[in-house]
Image (cartoon, rainbow, N blue to C red; front, side):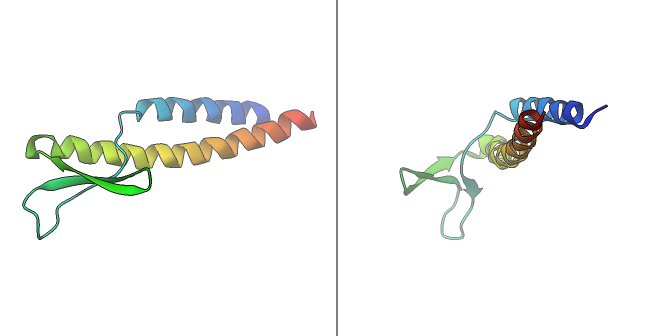
Length: 92
């Protein structure tokens, strides 16, 4: 298998992984000592926005925020692979 084929295979795998983690929420789910419940906090138009998270959906909300972190990492890796592919294809 050539290096170009390996890069194309890695690119396809990263795209599949990104698709598998698109059920996401941007922000963090926290419980502060001064507050009795759980809250999702995220930046919207440069301002922090906080939303109450019911106990029944807290676990799912935390999983979705982890998915956001995972997608960001996968996109970074995909960008690197795309760059390597671009360099390889232009050099041929």
